[in-house]
Length: 344
Image 1 (cartoon, rainbow, N blue to C red):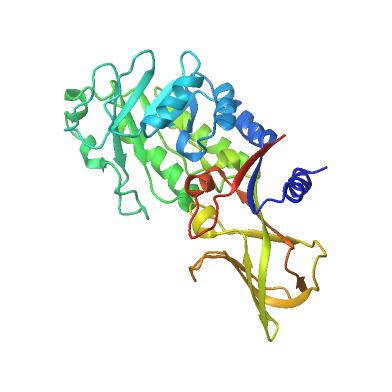
Image 2 (image 1 turned 135 degrees about the vertical axis):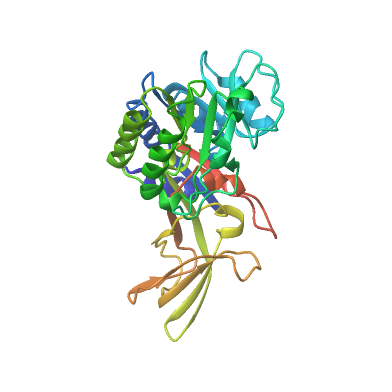
């Protein structure tokens, strides 16, 4: 039985209203692929914000080299499961006490006061005019000129290079640009190239890793592929609560909500319906699939299908949701946060 069929069976049996289902085996396969690209030079670390659940963090702890943390609750999670010699990268200016952890801490500019015991990293955005869009986070590339890095004992650079959709173009550009800037900076030992792997296939990732090795042969290279790690592993399941049809067009209200359950899902929604044969089907086309909140903009997606027949009580599935969807999984206006179920 497929994971989706198992999820649908569980959803009906438990009489759920809205539920995320994640295939831990699929997530582990993604992690295993990245693990195979790691060595002494290249590391993959897990951004905790991309899927802050212990079930997934334990898998990442077995496969990857470390974690990126943004706040104290994330750090507490990692401290509870960490292994020896894991790399911890802090993208937040919190004054961590490093203790027994190997922490790189980002500063937004050279005027930051880094706490004792952490390795000093500088967050840098790509402000070259050929890049669009570039990140608003960090300091300018121009900061890398002069003696600023040496005087401030910067040993790592963390690059933010803009929107995920530009990764095929941006990542090779960034790697070559960085290589030209840091090849003479011996004290900079680690280069964090961030993520933006969400839309890439395995071979594209392997090619980018190879390019990074070639362009930065004397540096430790860090990648943070957050969204990619849970690709093809997640579903959000709900029910059709109401159908309003006129002249073949329909507006479907579901037990799901973009506002409550899919706020951070920035990919195109993949929707499917599964009949429960509870009510008389209604034929519709140009269907708008909406959430149950009283917010008119709470729209999940649209479907154009002249043969679509739906009824109240049918199940609706949003496929290819990722761990980021859980970041804003909450209740509003009487709509409960979605359940989260992990399956193997």
